[in-house]
Amino acid sequence: MLRQTHSKDIALLSRVSHEVVARPAGARTFVLVPAFVVGELRSAFAIGFALYLPFVAIDLAVASILTGWACSCSARQ
Image 1 (cartoon, rainbow, N blue to C red):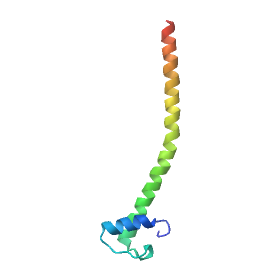
Image 2: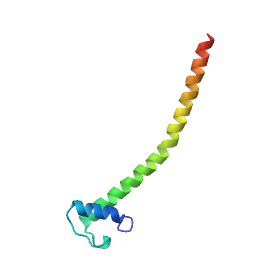
Image 3: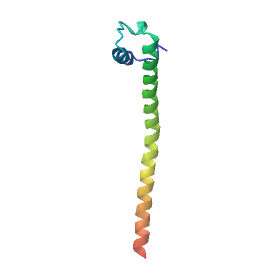
Image 4: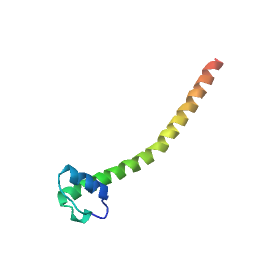
């Protein structure tokens, strides 16, 4: 778990817990586990946003095309 945890996450959570950690390998479990979870959540949100963005772009394009088509059809009547 230590290999997948960023050292800045360990440093942040060690400051929050008022625990002195000289190096990441010396972090205790109650600092290491939340740092790992925070890093994994950050990665998950980044992946989710990257997957969500193309669908939003496609949705906006389709909505724009259909709105333009509906306005042009109603103008003919």
